Length: 463
Image 1 (spheres, one colour):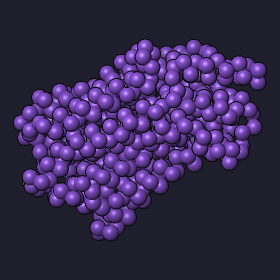
Image 2 (tube, one colour):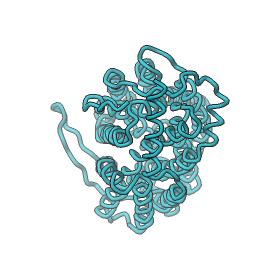
Image 3 (cartoon, one colour):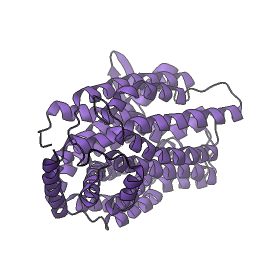
Image 4 (tube, one colour):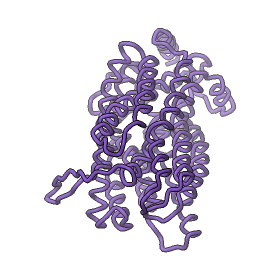
């Protein structure tokens, strides 16, 4: 239980989230845009689809957690899913960005089916992956370090995706509205994610065994979860944080295409081929790079002042900066880019903390109830992501429709103001909700130290 986690294993664990985050970030930043400007669906229709499919998918996450807790194989409970689901993950991702020659009704049905399957496959691989953190080490500082590696690689994968997505689409298809360009680009990323998931499977190890060997009573697992107060608080804080991010992410492409006036481009060469980055790409890449800075500084700060205080401070600052962001005009490009960096550093800080805090809540449940259901507890993290993403994504589509957005035409002043709000005031409200929840989080560092010592004594007696 106290084995030192090697650098190879930390990197291997990080590669798993690099894979997930490539698709997650492409979905967050570009899927609404793809459905409206390339696929040809109305934004309100897409918003409703996001709501319906993501609510089901959020409910599917605990099912995957329960299934993973009861999986028995020579590779452990959670690692096998990285091996089994990697290829379906890539294939369904490509199909999601395929545009069939159907009428409007047919396209809507196709979008519902492929997107629902994509989110279910995402859960099948990501919930076990997240749960893996809870069984790799029982040491709190090792978990913080593993969580930081995970987040660095997650944002690194996102950074790679956002750096290459528009250049690749333009390379394969000629412009950002190209159906062929999108399909070929997602196929490239699908190959990369498969390799990364398999590397994560090969390099990681499950070490922690539950105190009780027999824990197949689902009713008791759910009863324990219901009593897990830290779990519920993290669920609320996670939803607020993900709404904050998903509204900003969903509106970013529209913000630059339809509001900000700038012809600045960044040209570069890759493998002998010339590419150029638009202001949108520069903004998104800066955000991901700043997220990585936030991840890196989160662990030393949390180790010094505690996870709760670090989480609270980061989201409180993000709230204030987002409110100020509304004041920027379309010509304030440097201020827009600068505040994107500052806000993204704050956002980056919270993600390694919340994953590590979910592991702590699993320990709390085992300490309090004498039973451990890591997969079920960790499915809450994925559930909060999906609920937050559901609210933010559906809201983005509905808001665009409400403000009168029309794809590929000059926007009205009302629509432009609505897009501004989606980058500033609305995410600030969501961040404030997250701050309010985390105020009530009960697991201090002193409490966690007591829990860790007690559990280690019980595990040693059990084994």
